[in-house]
Amino acid sequence: MSVLVYTESENGKFKKSAFEVASYAKAVADQLGSSVTAISFNTESNDQLGTYGVSKVLNVADDKLTTFNALAYANSIVQAAQSENTQVIIVSSSTNSKFLAPIVAAKLKAGYVPNVVAAPEGTSPFSVKRTAFSNKGFAHTEITTETKVIGVSNNSFGVKENQTTAAIETFNSNVNDADFSVKSIEIDKVAGQVSIADADIVVSGGRGLKGPENWGMIEELAEVLGAATACSKPVSDMGWRPHGEHVGQTGKPVASNLYIAIGISGAIQHLAGVSASKTKVVINSDPEAPFFKAADYGIVGDAFEVVPKLIEKLKEFKAQNA
Ligand SMILES: Cc1cc2nc3c(=O)[nH]c(=O)nc-3n(C[C@H](O)[C@H](O)[C@H](O)COP(=O)(O)OP(=O)(O)OC[C@H]3O[C@@H](n4cnc5c(N)ncnc54)[C@H](O)[C@@H]3O)c2cc1C
Image (cartoon, rainbow, N blue to C red; front, side, top):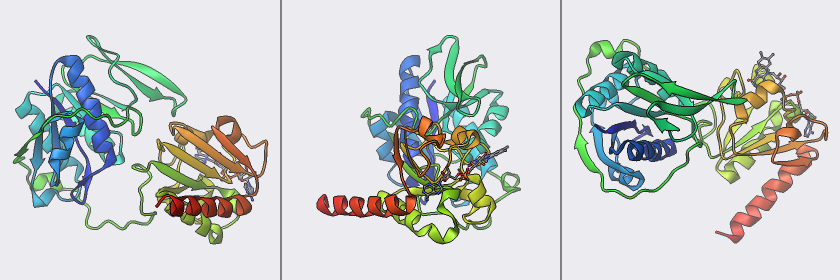
């Protein structure tokens, strides 16, 4: 009985979250006295997963599955779980994983807990800690079904090395036309180069930036830092930025290592979606802005003065350390 982990990739390369869920799966396997099998789709360098404790990789090499398809991927994971006699399935908390995990759980009659932030608190009974109330609290949750599906929050457990040699096998999953009743024809990327879900650093702008014409400095700061760009809800509502960048309770959740909020007041609905970020830096001209209470570091100042200086200093630092 192994622990099965779905390791996500894009264009044949593993996402960072793949290494985090693999590390998490290894921790679960250690608690159960078991081993980790990963399922990947059309991925190169599957041996990389050995670094994080995966001892076997089932690589689904099928041209039909080059692009994510929730039902087809879920069916493949179910087949892998059955062939491996798995009782615990680990996925990330990405949009795609949150899409397929309930399908996997329903097909295997498994209990599913998303947004899990730590290794299981116990395996008998099986209990996990997850975020609750839009990241304002935690719930200690018991899963009583024989098969369990766990969605790990991004950047919560961390990537942990645990060197093993991974045996790589091609897995022929049995997908058919019915699995593709809904499919993506084409994907247009409208937001920045780095996706918010995978970003280590997110640079986010609010209404304090006055208009879309001022986003050049946000994009430049993001580029220097290798960060994703994001924004508050009113900014996307007004059409200053694409809706895909809206973060918060009603937008995308952010669990980056560093979240830089510029000209954002820190309304409760915004904080609900970003509070899982490890370090929060706030730049705001109003010292009374509520965001300062939630910040790890704050700069009281005009964004139009602070941000260009920050970019300049970061560029100098990068040049010196190149
Ligand atoms: C049901 C519901 C759901 C919601 N969901 C979300 C959500 O998911 N995400 C979200 O973001 N909001 C959400 N909101 C809206 C939320 O309540 C706030 O209205 C919104 O977050 C405010 O956006 P803001 O901080 O960009 O703008 P503002 O509140 O207008 O704040 C602008 C900030 O910029 C500062 N500022 C001004 N000029 C400068 C300058 N030159 N330099 C530096 N700082 C400056 C100001 O001091 C101020 O703090 C929701 C609201 C409701 C009712």
